[in-house]
Length: 437
Image (cartoon, rainbow, N blue to C red; front, side, top):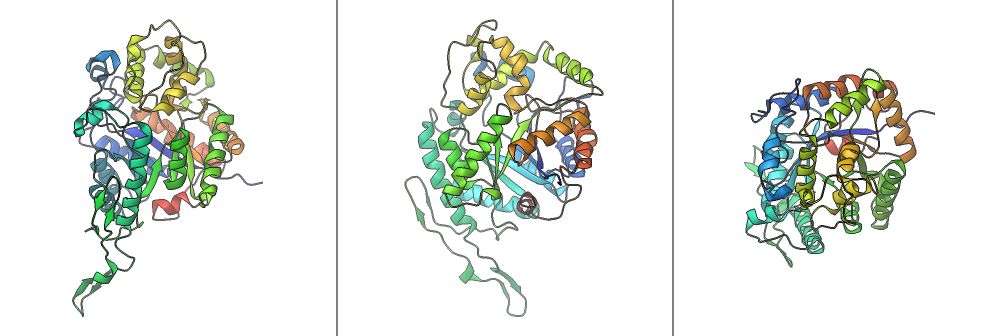
């Protein structure tokens, strides 16, 4: 029986690289060159896409101050992912590039125009990670005192996606004629206003950009709540998930596919990508020792708690490190991320949650060992889950050259040897590469 192939992506952000480490870039990646080279490395390893996370504020949640986040370079500085996606896309030929862009920050027309432009510049390899933002501090950068409640955000997002679909469809296929003999560049009968008037948005259209190679970008989403899962099942081409072990991974994927089928979508058109943080070494003992050193670094707990606080909009500095959390926490921010953190260990102290669950916060299953053993485990997990792939990342999304090479030139060749992942690209468009298997 042949091995079923699965997809690979990488989850990162446009923040300082792993600047403290001996093999780090040094913390000044702002000209983009480090991340351009990262994209080229991932393309050499035949990844489907690289996804750039984003936030729209300097967090002051942890300890009620900007200090810890800026001291560690954890959630800020953070540069805009859209220009970086263009730079990475134009420096590669096959790798998909996905930027996180919030519906809070862009009116639908500007979002559609930007996404269409990037898809053209990357020759059909752009994706949009659809987010509504989950932090009051971000809302305050856009004229609001606080975020709308989650249910209202989803209601607004549903109409937003409706408008986006109309705008992307406002140029029909074949609208650009370039008929030199008749002097006609575009057929005006194939370019249409959308005249949308809804509860939240009023947009005339049409887009003033040509129809892009994919028609619309690939949509990425990370819904975890029941409402979020419905939204993702309805709109997403690829879904990001952080599960809690193999059973949880399978249950999540089965649930998404069931919701998609109920909406009339082909479940195979949605690729669920599970976040993992492989820890690699020459032996399993070596891998575990390197992980132990990373987790025992003096800055590690502050970096992790500053990150978790920014993501969840909860100040974890208020809780004693050596006591369990006081019951189940809730938030108007990223509840799925908060639930994942709390699930990692019932009864554990906050310090233990951070140290023991650092990988678990962004990793769906433990992957520690040699490239060979980790590759075998990844194959085993995908066979149990049923698909569709892994999104590789690190605990606070920072990456250094050493880890990148260990994955691209150590782990991926083992996966290729097992027949688990592609060895060459067959298609030009990102959507087609995702639908290849």
